[in-house]
Figure 1 (tube, rainbow, N blue to C red):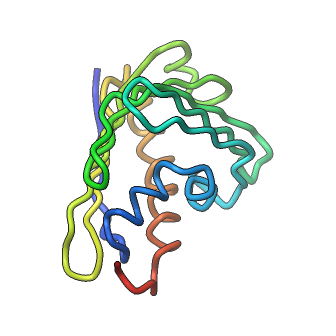
Figure 2 (tube, helix red, strand yellow; figure 1 turned 90 degrees about the vertical axis):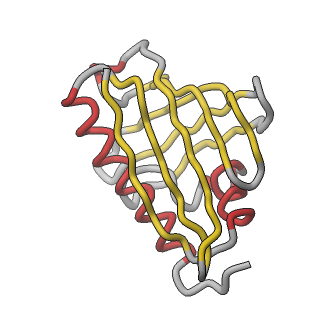
Length: 149
């Protein structure tokens, strides 16, 4: 098993970023590694609640992930199980991993620390790192130039 951790500065208050991480409209603005659209976003943001997100990449492939919320501490922490329901990394098919997102207020917004753990192989970790980097870059761009708070 292996993991990855990514950090981004986001030009928005943690509560606003938390909403972008947990609401269907917010998810539609950033989920997926490239400019392809989010096709479906369902969330039930409570411990034990489920999420499901389906997106299309610019190469026309579709991917869907789903899981359960394990920890919800608005606006500072979100922990969820993660699995590919459709598409995704073949090495992770049928496997459940863990995503942890921590938001910390800083000058001009917040610092987001994103950890995806319990990935099976280094190749899978590298693939997820590339995907999450693209998605988190979109999230940061979404709030670029916004007035924090």
